[in-house]
Amino acid sequence: MARRRTAVGVSVAAMSVRDTIFALSSGRPPAAVSIIRVSGPAAHHAGEALAGRLPLPRTAALRQLKHPQSGELLDEALVLRFDSPASSTGEDIVEFQCHGGRAVIDSVLGALGSLDGLREALPGEFTRRAFENGRIDLTQAEGLADLIEAETEVQRKAALASAEGRLSMQIELWRERLVVLSARAERAIDYDEDDLGADEALLSECNEVASELQDWLLRPRIDPLKDGVRVVVAGPPNSGKSSLVNAIAGSERAIVTDIPGTTRDHIEVPLAIGGLPILLIDTAGLRETTDTVEAIGVERAAALTQSADVLVWLGQPQAAPNHPRLIRVHARSDLPERRRPPLPLGSVPVSSVTGQGLAELMNQLRTTVKTLLPSEGAIALNRRQAALIEEAAVALRDARNAELVILAESLRRARSAFDRLTGRAGVEDVLDALFGRFCLGK
Image (cartoon, rainbow, N blue to C red; front, side):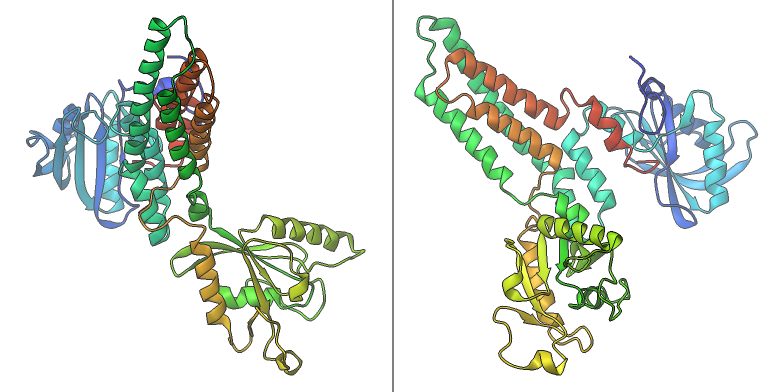
């Protein structure tokens, strides 16, 4: 195997499946119970060295753990044994469910480290072995990484859909259809050499698959769910933007003064509103200025306004930028001069001081943000997955009105995109970055 560097500075050659790896796989101590996992060809030998006779596969037994050299009693623990290939990594595995004190964990890890052929696992190495041994594919590994990082219920459910393999099954269905279409195209090339035009049925089925792929590309993506929907609060100076951000956040996140231009750079506040992840962004007041620093802030504010997923506008309604998801706010509605009718039509009256209108604004935000997020339990694509599905769809669209030879090549390109999507081929540059996201012991 050629040597290359991983994201954590260790060569892939050092992560050979011949190694047996171990790590703490549960949360950091102290805890009531901690799980230490060993995976690899010497896992069962290591388990016997510490615990004596191992239980039957996929059963648990109480054992005394002793240091393999000194015989010192380390702990009493539940020991589980899994045999290859029926394990989470596809290798032999032993798990020790120990007491969760730091000293106990350190002593067991130290005993394992004293055995020849064992080494501590790298971050994500257990999951990487599961991928390399065919226990999961790349989309499931991505879903698992998202599941570990999930902070809201919506994030958890979306990640679970990928981790359970639902996207993998859909991709396999598409791939099987393309394999059948490719076989038909190749057969037609072999037996109809005098007429290399693709028949209508073949083209029609290619178009059907391309349309399905395009429908999936129109679905809400998982990236806003992970990073937060970007809700930008914008408007002229002293329009109440920072006060509103603080009111929504429930804390003093932005500086508020009567001096125009107080906010000179944007402030990002990650929040969950009704379980929906958002990134609330306070911006500099939009105006002409000769102050060099403020001018930079105004320029950034204008760019953020254009790139916002949701725009909350606190200026004059008629001056609001053209945006597909615009919420107009009539701020500081508690002030006498702001209460005089007629109030701006279509704007939500809000007072950051009294809280008036804040509930209505939050409801509008929730409703708007939901349209940008996948529905509960739905399969959602990340950027990498969407790019490869787009590549497959483009390849199939290129086959329209094409000769059989070109159509066959287009089908091959689409299958290649699916293979990279699931990790069958051509994803070496993706693996290190992905598995580097995992914690030690996963």
